[in-house]
Length: 291
Image (cartoon, rainbow, N blue to C red; front, side):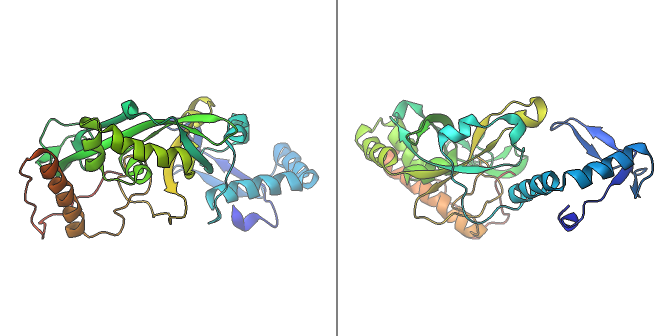
């Protein structure tokens, strides 16, 4: 606890409940008691240990607080340093940034399909079709283009494999999901070569974090949390990003979101000659992405 920084207190807890859903942890119950200044041999031994190793406690506390309340400045590490970390030396909430490029981008590793606008679950419906999604439990969802991209990131010290989902793929390619969908399905190698030249030569930032396998099995696996393009401000996270990352739609009104989707549908019409769904400018119900 941050307010215990100056003096570490020995406190006793009774009737704690063990949870293992996201790794082993302890939580209080209705019958839990917190005992200040507990008595007994074990409490006395712990008090003596606190006196002998105050710096160990302070360093550990500072590490936890820095991870849970990070500085606005990016903590950038190399891929080699990231790979050298050990499970016992990191915390579940820890995130870092790497600065990298894409090694040998390949159009075959782009997956473009039609899915739920909220949760990105694949669907066979035509783009722009309203439908109740059984995954994100929204009765007013709508089908839209969704894209993912598997790539190997490199920074000169090593490589790591990642998968970017819809919003991060759009940000990385500097194109909308509909434009990427059309490039993929028409196998427009010229357009993809332009994208490839950018992402393989211009470094960008990747925010990486740990999967739940760390807390469950003490297995260290880093996963992509967010992509930020260099010299472009980071966007705050929005509910429902398919990659758990921020999206370009944060702060948009429901009408503005629908206008953006209508724009994608217009692009679909130009590419394939299909008449898009007309979306009312004043929606009767807002729809948000899944958490």
